[in-house]
Length: 119
Image: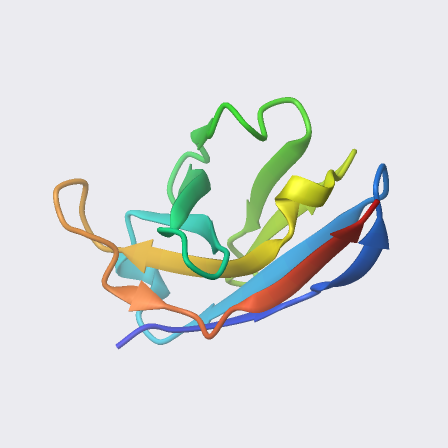
């Protein structure tokens, strides 16, 4: 069973930066990729970025491309989301998720961390 714990959320002004962290434990060697999603009240959860655990291949939602960077430190079992040039519309609860294979859904989720961007 994989456990994910997010940290690093907070309040920041538009144009500012934040770095989120997701610490993984319990069976990380068998992971396929980890991803960040976000959600605001009344809206569906939205994909933000993902990174392949082995090899580090990344992909991003168009809405964050060029502003956000996902990275991982396999020695620390941690995935990061560096968020620059933040906009008020980036305000959301951010969740870390993990899956074991390319065809499975994200079965493991963290508890989320709140990011609020003021205008």
